[in-house]
Every structure is written in C-alpha cells, then in structure tokens.
Image (cartoon, rainbow, N blue to C red; front, side):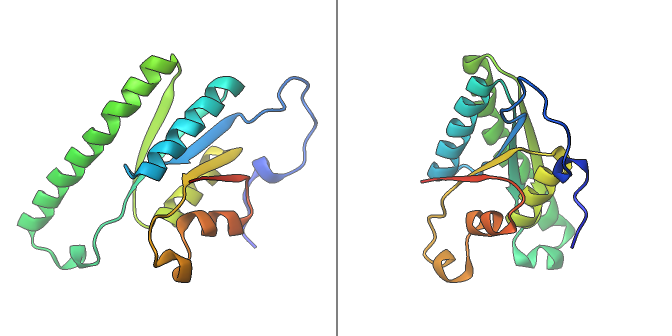
Length: 157
C-alpha cells in the first residue's frame, strides 16, 4: 500500500471548515469535460474552495520514434492546444470572480490526475463521463479514479 501523506490521516475537526478546500477537475476540451469544469467551478465558488483544473496531454504511442522535426511540430501543436484551453479558463475565472489554478501534465490521464490530486491534497475530484464505447470494456479514467478510492469523485454526464 502506498503512503499518501497527512491528507489521509485522521486529525482534529476544525469548526467552520467542513467543506472541500480543494476541488480538482480534469479538463480536456470534450463536451463532458467542459461540463465537469463548469460544475467544479460552481461548486468551488459556492463552497469558497480552491479550484484546480488539470489538463493532461497524452502523447501518441509513436512519439518516441519521431525525429526532431516532428517533435518540434508536435510541441507547437501542444502549445496551441494549451493556449486554446487557457482562454475559456481565464474567462471563467473573470466571470466567476475567483482564482483558478490551471495545471498541464503529460502522460496517462488517470495517472496524472491521480498524482495531481494526491500532491495537492484534493478533497474532491470532478471529471466528465467518457464518450468512448471502448471504455465500457477497458475502463474509463472516471471509473479508474472512482475505484482508486482516495477521494470522492463526481462524474458529470
């Protein structure tokens, strides 16, 4: 069993701090992820929680075989995608008048969302439901997060 630190060890109850302190949401630009981000923002605003949005870039399997030129082109494409994600997040932060932390990670979505939630001591993880039929067999990121059993996970349709 892995050690997860003080966030998962029992401690004294603090009066007036019974809501989530950190709400973490996985966003990827899909319709369900956008709804998950909006839901998480509303919840964080109402609970006066810190909102952390995590975007995970999953490089294609052939990335390791790419030449320097392809890697540079891929980097430009990644940067453009990240910029596209930042714009609506800035708009949401301004509209809701709340700070939003935006984190970009690279790798497997489940692994990186889980790692971010553990590192930040998230109290709640919000993700969109998978729209892929293949995930019924293999298991979606949301399903895997729920099964990890470390925090409440809200799956937004």
